[in-house]
Image (tube, rainbow, N blue to C red; front, top):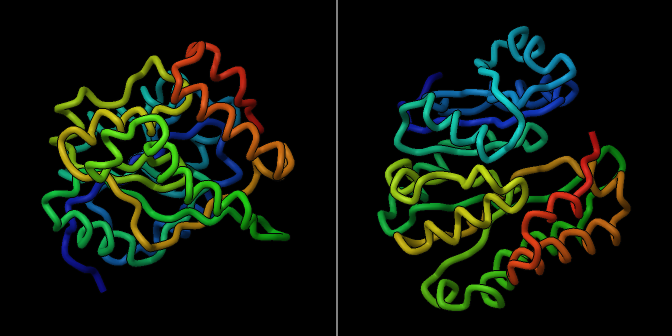
Length: 246
């Protein structure tokens, strides 16, 4: 059974994600109703990401590495009025498109995201999941209180954030010079045009960073990067604080 076209494009910025794509493809195939568009934007992968995407039937384009720039390219290559940014290691609930459509039916909301639970094959990362949830509140309260008081919340990559194309275009999209915290930066700029919020529905996200770094070190890295971003301390060096695990 196919539901009505919800007018939502799913953009997947990817880099060396060949191993995660089969599970992601199963997640996308289960969505009901279907999204209007799906597009993977590869950032110069050195593995078989593009070949795997083709094999799985996931439409893809290729460009240079940089998640913000990849997201901008994906938005430019699609037409739907609502955009959802989905990391390749995050899995949506089957009714995600209906959830997005209901959320965006409130015209005051211009950007929102799901509540992320980090988990792996052996355990659920409740400490990190709680930190990811509470920082959507404490980060704007501490660093952008004027936006917090107006209902602004800061979302991050694990939250499968979605937004209105019109508002995204109005603020100029993602800042392609930012290699980390690009989602939070977008929230700050979009919060001046409407409500940004976290909804009470769950997405599952791989705990691979936490598994590689260790849970307490991972939360220290998240906290340190967030504080430096919030206080604008040597922003060009922030990527050095956030080691990649692939």
